[in-house]
Amino acid sequence: MKVFKNGLTTGLFLQLAIGPVFFFIVNLSLQRTILDGFAGVLGVTLADYVYITLAIFGVGKLLEHKKVKKVFGLISSIVLIIFGLLIIKGAADVNMSTKTVIHSTDIFSSFITVFFLTLSSPLTIMMWTSLFATKTIEYNYTKKELLIFGFSTGLATFIFMGTTVVLFSLIKGTIPVVLIQTLNIIVGCLLIGYGGISAATLATASHHTRPKS
Image (tube, rainbow, N blue to C red; front, side, top):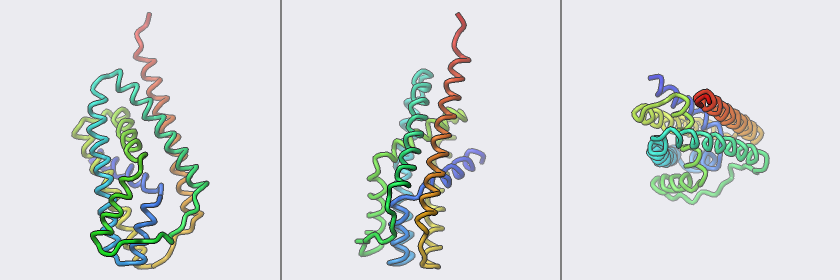
């Protein structure tokens, strides 16, 4: 239960980094129907699970050896820092709008469009892999616990996006750009901080385990 709760909390935190997929699903809810919105939610959730599965199996193989575990842990921390910087840069540069043109003509195309839109991000797999690597090192998760963590992290996508669809279908409103940018900057800073702390912890652990001459 603790692993599940940790994954759900982590997943909900990551959802604060609102991007193009969020706005596309909002548009589905506003311009079409609530069913189109939930079709989009299913698409982004399944796409996340694809990346989560790849990340879990990749981490499992890479972390079989202690030396590889240490090196990969450091690389993962650096990637999280870079990812945080990119989020902050995007929040400062992007001209966000909910006026995205939607080409969906039915519920199935709404699902397919969001599914492939989510898969199209090249940094997503890096982010998931880095996240699972740092969590595995920090909490020493077993493969079974990592699967539970991955399931609950992906479930957070469905919960957050599903709630968004319901809310926007009810109020038919928009989210202020300033609020979105602020949330992205906060998430970016936290990712940078988390990556820095993980790297420092890993370096300290390596120093303590180094044999004395």
